[in-house]
Image (cartoon, rainbow, N blue to C red; front, side, top):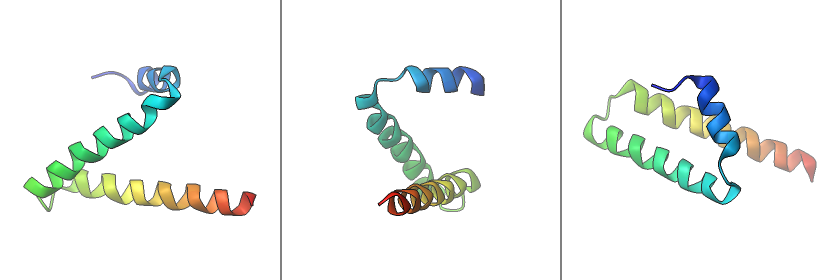
Length: 65
């Protein structure tokens, strides 16, 4: 496995247009895990954290307006 530092670097080097593809791929991977195993704690946590991140970003965007 790649270290978190390496992943941060890779993420920083990823083209802006490719970021939605990365997020979509992650979503699809965890969605499939959840469909196959509805009680999978890793998949449940992924969607919980994704929901929190989306809410926080939305809240920050609202505060900027």
